Image (cartoon, rainbow, N blue to C red; front, top):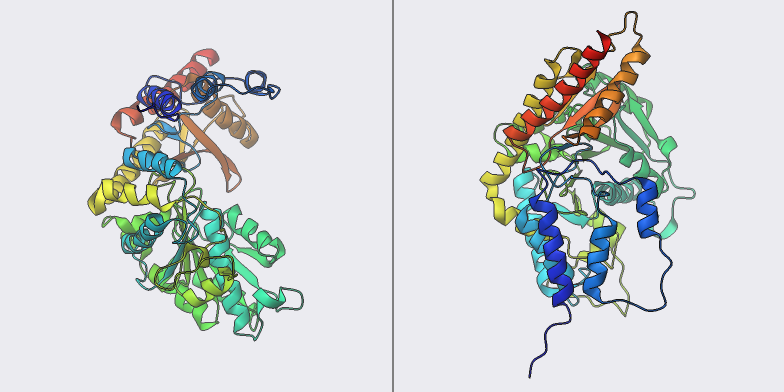
Length: 476
């Protein structure tokens, strides 16, 4: 006599709620609707002494979070460079949780360990990176930066006879980090985590195109002569998607003995597209690279990738051996390359996503997102009362909205720009995140979702037009 699986009721309810969410994204508001007080009231309950059936927990969870979930999985979410999740990636992520493997060692997770090794090879091929580069699958680009910069710290100090893993940083030569002044905050956080300190990070002025120029970098390198230096270059900066000139800057940095790290959180994926890979000419000559999977590869959170041209430095920075830790000399042991031991099998979702799309599908997704971003930005900028600030090179662009009040100041335009974005969010039609760029508040348009299509672009532009039209009526 067989009994039904104890997992089935809860998993079936989860499937039902998940499909209800995903299948109604086009009809639902993109932004969360439930207030903070409502969510606290629903969710901040005293923990009961008695438990409850698993299926009932899932139903209650879906009910209590209703209205508190952003529609970031859908095609009208244009904030913060957040991608969605491909069907195969989402399903593989569910399997990853069901398998519940600790992807630290082959002994704990044989198949997942092999999947991770395959993923690394596929990713290097897609991203145009050296085949012999080592890699790590991390929780996101933040930890990919930390992993890569830990390898840089090891290599730079080893050249000066300092074993940082053994002796720490007290008394070590001070490492400096040079980058354009539009660098992402995750670089500064990585510097904090690694004990280098934010004071080691120097943002250099960039040109009108958002690029670090060779003369500027050379001057900073000359001023740092003799010190260990990490140069961080941008492959798609956070506001306008600017790309540094890798072919020019990387050899320059290397002449001064610097380590070159590339922040390609989303922009490194342009190398998967024949149309856009010219932006990354020379990028393969860097020393390390970081990017996200939960952005342009469209896998569920959390997924980041670090690649290091000098695998010995990465392994020295990350590996640790102990008698209680199983080691297999015949396979790549993930724990030797990652900052974590206990970790989920992040490679499974990435593996599934790449198999679902294939090389051509990934290129098409990148190009489709770039085309949608261009249509969004130019379509919004053409509306009365809107202003084009940055026309997208890839999937990032900026627009601004001008207060029509006679004598309106720059601060009035800033305020009105935020109000327009908030009004669009309130309409439920789209979600944009704003930013301050070169002293101006802007609506930041980011397209990173495999589902975004022409209809989504049209709805978003129409939503902005409605807000501006209402303002015009109110002013007459």
